[in-house]
Image (tube, rainbow, N blue to C red):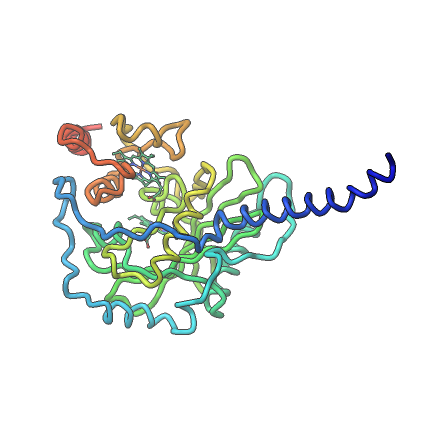
Length: 313
Ligand code: HEC
Ligand code: HEC
């Protein structure tokens, strides 16, 4: 009996190890996934009449113009080889059991900026749809977006400028994963300080980081990376938004109750409820067919949404 056991032992142990390997391989795969991320669909306005301004004409922007713009950030910083879209950060033990301190959050943001500047990030570069289409900007908004993570934090860096700006600006989101639900911090990064922002980010980011939506199918460097990064973003748990004391929660306006949206955008949904303060991304995401995902609203539903957007509170 004992002999039998000892004969089987190595086999059982190696089977166990093998399964463990398969399992951890799978887990890593869920965001390493070079497998076959869905291609990025061209952004085409459905002509719903929801937009306040006609879709911005980008026909004058060639792929070469776009690439030349993007390269002004430094050629050594973009077009990276990658196997996983998220750069691992060393594990830093949190100093408090009650969540990351503001100093730690800002430290993560500065570290991401530093890694980008040293060419250690894996950025996806695009002309984003939502800010480009925005009525106040109305010109190509150039984005380099990269992600970093350890078990305590998910860190996102956005290096951004409009086509006519000289200099690139730095923005960051840090999700504190050590608290439940996670808490999201937003900031603009300057040479001398990291400044937390609330209201100015909330209109579009009320439920955290957003998927990559290029304004045109070809105004993007590495669409596969963008899909993989969007997949990683989609795995985020529902989080809360940190409002710094000097940038408190804005006036929300009435809540959107359209059935086609509240299945996901609800108090207990995957994303938070939507309010009038979110009108701009609502107009753009619905008009370009991104929301609701994989579905098309009927004429009646669009009319209902239009009436809500036009209506009082
Ligand atoms: C007008 C809507 C809008 C506003 C306002 C806005 N963002 Fe974004 N942001 C986006 C969109 C859309 C993306 C994805 C862009 C793309 O497709 O390249 C994005 C991407 C990002 C990313 C990269 C991670 C991600 O979500 O994909 C960071 C970091 C970021 N924004 C920070 C900020 C900060 C900080 C503020 C406030 C100072 C802010 N944003 C305000 C729309 C907005
Ligand atoms: C099947 C679930 C689902 C439905 C239904 C849905 N959304 Fe979303 N929505 C998402 C997800 C996931 C994101 C974040 C991914 C992204 O940025 O594309 C999102 C993001 C948004 C955002 C950006 C703010 C945020 O919550 O992140 C707006 C605005 C939005 N959706 C509007 C709508 C509107 C309007 C409808 C109804 C016409 C709708 N959505 C229906 C899943 C859904």
